Length: 82
Length: 236
Image (cartoon, rainbow over all chains, first blue to last red):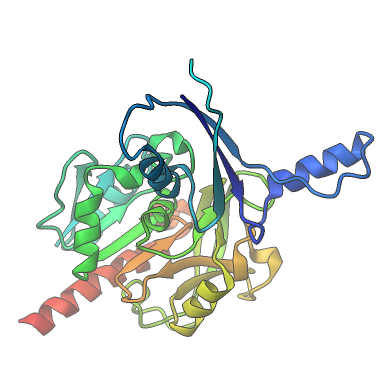
């Protein structure tokens, strides 16, 4: 099974990378761009025949893959098997 | 008096810390590899600067799971002095021994410069002997040193006098021009509620001799030594 995890900076956290990319997009012919936020995208392949998969994955999303002080995460289950 | 310097793969200020600490009378500093599981028998613990685990994922995010860290947390909870410098500060925030987090510098630049910090709390374990308002000049070298905490955390830090150092202009004013990385309220170093765990982005380890441009960092290590001696005297 493939699982995707998207980690994004919380709204209150300054995202200078996003601001720099927003400025570049505005300069390059898209003045209508309001804001850009940059996060992380993780593609994870998992053997899905294991118990408590969802809760264990969420625990690691909180402890390792994101820092809840500054980031939110979302687990997207693509459902497709390789 | 024994100081443990934790070495992670990617630590690169471990030798600076060792040299700085061994330059203090009565101190013996030793390396402790991150795969060890005990820091028993040491009087203080140093998490040095560097790029532990290549800073992959987030700075300090993987180092916090090193085998040595449960013992560091245990010793911290018993009141032992712990100082995290630069990457060590990031590790302390990641593991939750200190509140807040360190994010990408507002300028997006890696900042390598001498900065001026101001002592905000004179009687802490780490600034003992520095009257409030003392200016300490130390180098910084980081890309992710912008301290962030939410409003409630920040209020608590200020109310409980946990902000130990702020970045200031050379003449001592808290001003954006003295802030190298965009840290909220110019925060350069904080301690935990109990006052025994301290994290800072500037490098006291690189400012312990005048020929390095400043010896102000030695005041922080000397303060730790004084605090440990005082607690021993109280126990005796």
